[in-house]
Image (cartoon, rainbow, N blue to C red; front, side, top):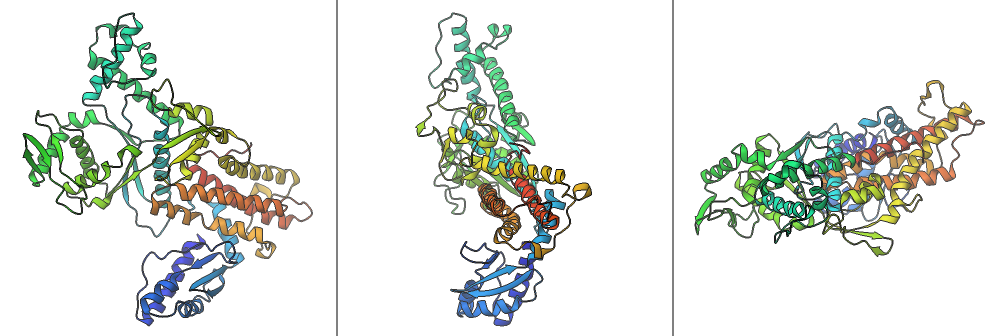
Length: 550
């Protein structure tokens, strides 16, 4: 990967210069893409960091470093620019070689050979099996599944998990709600209990109950409903292209004795005290933990709060050998994050080893008109409804485009549009168009025997559009690293969208298949192949398909 090798060479020479000047280079100084008006492929702000540290004029530092960078194989030129940047133009031959390398092993493009592999457990969605998955669960699923794919591509060991809240009072409440619908269906007067579960989906479930249900109690109704709804969750996730390594049931946690063992573990660490006949987790005095008050673990009547089994579940994550945790929550869990961090600290782990991501709400529209809640789901729009209408590709790409902490307006009409106005269609069309170009090249006999394209003579690729496309392809690994840093797939989604724009500009200006000029055609076909492969890889990491025809 051209930018990885370039960064290593730049960092080594910059570190040597800094040492001579009496300073040290900071680790993690990254390469940056220059703004559109700058004619370069890489822009370095490093001189401003070093200038501040050495109390030197950043422009003088930039000029010195630019001289040091001469002779690096990938660099054509390095120029200092105000107020203290170094703008680097890469050799066309190096950019061509990078594109060729992409086409030889696209599935490995973006893997960081220098990265220290981390063992990470990502938990996401984890919706209560008391109703259908709602649209917000789709956003959490997209964030989690895309990050698992991206982190694995970079080189980390990542486990994806769904925590099933199938224990406690909710089982009985769901059972009572379903029994009321069952009785209604059979002509008996009934009413959903106060605080029970609403929505016509319970009427649907009531119609599916077996004959034996007439002898059931509320708990049996609840258990049957949870099993049935959990099966629908699994089907929704399969159709949404989300894969979990484990569906971890809270009921199994209780059955194993992990909840009681965790309570004893916290007692042994001196983290639990008794007040008003209840057991409390004492964390508010721990500044690093960050919680604003102590929390009840066991009520005065001896029943554990939901917080205790949640702590026990997180303890199993560390006990299974994971050094880092990623928890993805919906917008209603924002206040839970400090509590969770406090629990991690109480268990004896660094709170910063648990990364909590809270994604914001989604507002559904048809053009300018807001879509109301679903009658069948009750108080929300189900993921299945949106997926069936807009398609999995549009849902996943739209959900990935924005940062998790931003609200998202999802336009159903835009998601279904087959035009460049629709961002997912705009990206997928690039892949389909390039596949069409290759089919045409084969018809014209431009492709070599076997279809393998050699690295082109760099002198053939001289237009600004060709160079821009090669440079954009080179930035794919950096987009993945941005996702890792921000724990969000939105840098990748936006990168693919930008790459699509660069390719469309290239296609408009540069004729690819020209039997009268086969060498230039093959050079441009290699560029097309690189763009095709990177678009396919980017979309794949986002869980979006890359069609060959549209």
